Length: 569
Ligand code: ATP
Ligand code: MG
Image 1: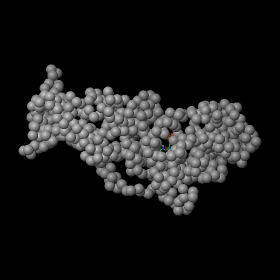
Image 2: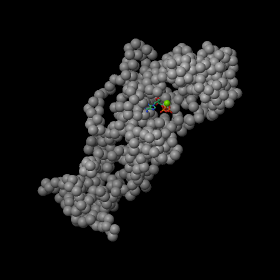
Image 3: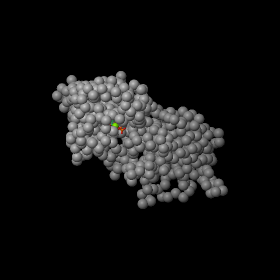
Image 4: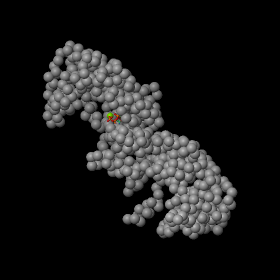
């Protein structure tokens, strides 16, 4: 059923479907707003690494800028020195670049605007629209009221403008300890929208900022910084996720009071994926508590994790295109992400043979020292990928589970007396399975048909199975990492504690795998299909020519596994 859903999606894939955001932009352009400019931005907070949800936002914002011949900014929303680090900035820049979004010379930081924001705050104070409050965080919360009850005015709300100016300056100069005072906008403590109940504009934090150092000890809130940063940059459409819908009246209020360029905030539903955690806080916990090897662990939904796993930027962009944008929350099936990857890699991946769990085969009637060369197509989907030479010898490896002593009816691979095709080479027939004292099969003795070179025979007899293999003498040893979902629940937060839903078998490491010699120097970013095993990429961190390490990006669909599953039911 899942497959049907995906295929249906395939057929429906239109060029560039319209959506509610495009409709808004079209209308704004028709009305000549913003001098017919479109200018978007992606505003990450550098407090974690980007994930696939951020990719959606990047592709959306950059895609709109491209389609409307507009501009796209990358802006760090770096207003909280306590959680932010420049290492996050670096990883984010790398990821956005890798995804292919181009900000040209427009890389900005909200911290670049601290001076301007400070001046604007003074302007609001002078107009009686902002005040210094001595209530602490808890009192502010109490005074704020609830969804059903209005808030109460702070006893400090009616301070004179002079006093506010003096106190705010002292706040800035570092005369007060953290948390002792805040600057608040003076709006309406009885507003039906809690965000308008005198929101905090500045907090005191005696903390060094990754860019401004010790220059500031008052830091702007998200609400105070965000819209004004958009305005300074001339953003026309400020696209954000739905949780900011209730903040929009405040976004508008600040810009209206300042009478500056006024972008339009538009909200869309964030991407949720089943079996996947997207909260930065939880992802950080997975890293800090070492459930994964780092932010770029190939099982992480981070862009760096997906890259290391072997996702191409094209596949992620295509995925973001297919899921579209909507106003309503939904959960996307991770199978769609995997499907998009398979589809992309099918077109570009170089086919190789790699034996993950080797079983030696000795071809008894093949001369001991003979080495034969075969030409193999690199990618049947792409002629320009060319061919390569593979070598055939008397001893080869095949996949251990491609042999069964006592095969069931629908098993078309090797078994005693059975004949199969070796991909690109000859037909072989199994004569005998050699066992050790423990009864384990240690090697197969086979014979080949010299007439079957290239994969067919003069008498036209057919075989059902085709196996991949490598020459024992020429193959290179490799480590292969197979991944499964990091969480075994569709909703990883089910039951309250996401750590309890971690899949204990999400990583399987195979060593002593035997791969074609050409894979020795494989580099991350080169995409391979190991025949019958799936798509693989060299691990960007751990792979070396002396010790190649491959990550399985995604498997191929295995009809045998399906038959087995059906049989088991
Ligand atoms: P935080 O809780 O730290 O704010 P965040 O995921 O919202 O986490 P930001 O750095 O603020 O992180 O996000 C940058 C941009 O990416 C924002 O515009 C945000 O709306 C968008 N974004 C974040 N998560 C998703 C998601 N799952 N789907 C689509 N867009 C997202
Ligand atoms: Mg956010």
